[in-house]
Image 1: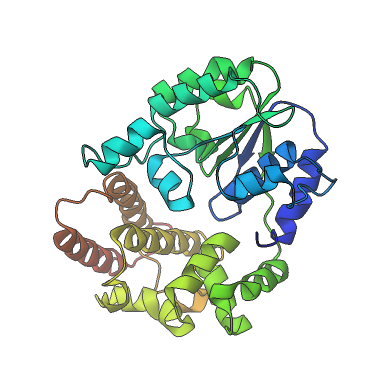
Image 2 (image 1 turned 45 degrees about the vertical axis):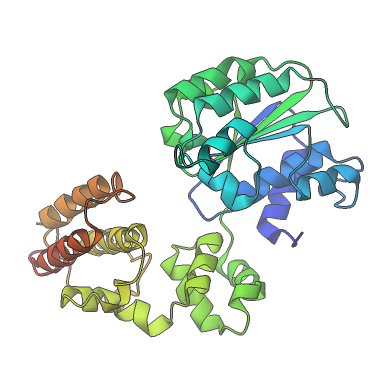
Length: 339
């Protein structure tokens, strides 16, 4: 297991000193919610835990590493379970293998019911059972309500750790039953040091790592994804003006969701510029003139609406053409700042 980022290790130590049966780790994406949640589960289940977390060597730690710990229930969307190596229950796996349905991107109510049943079984190894829920906002109304009573009054020694990138999307009744921990943002120096130490960023310059971190809005895990994509500094800096000219070359081969995310970042920075605030994702000096505020506000609403169906477009090619044309139109609508 690779070492935790230092800002996560510090949070882990503080959280292990707290009492309570349910923690909610909340913050924007890319701050390490899943990694911290799993580290907490490991420490709670470890046979020889220390003040800084799990020992990493006992049978319990090994069982978590190979995803077979009988006292840990990982409640994730099926797509994410498959990506991260967590096993699905036999029925769900068979339906997917037989192509009766695709893996769910939400936490299904059937999985929530299995988690409730899990709490009622006898413990296998130690004194605690753990349910890890991530991303918690992927629970729909039915699955969240299924978990609610158990979350409020767990049977025996059961602990919950929920992690989310969108706490506002959780039911208030879920939030009220948890102790909320706001994820800590690392400083730039700390984030850059960690980023350059990762295998996928090996050999990169500090300046390039700074570009990845800016493209991710300061979120280290998201910056690492940019490192993996091979994004180069000049291309990112020049992207706003390229899009203003209708040049979509850099984005052409990117997934639709990634293209949309870039447009949302550009819209954010232009709104910040129009309001007299610094940009977050792109260099200030590389942004085109700020469009009229009304045009930016309308574009922002359109992008949020597009995000609801970006994973299931009617035609990816036509959608991309429409985005390119609309982006060029908005960026051409310059006028009095704040108008």
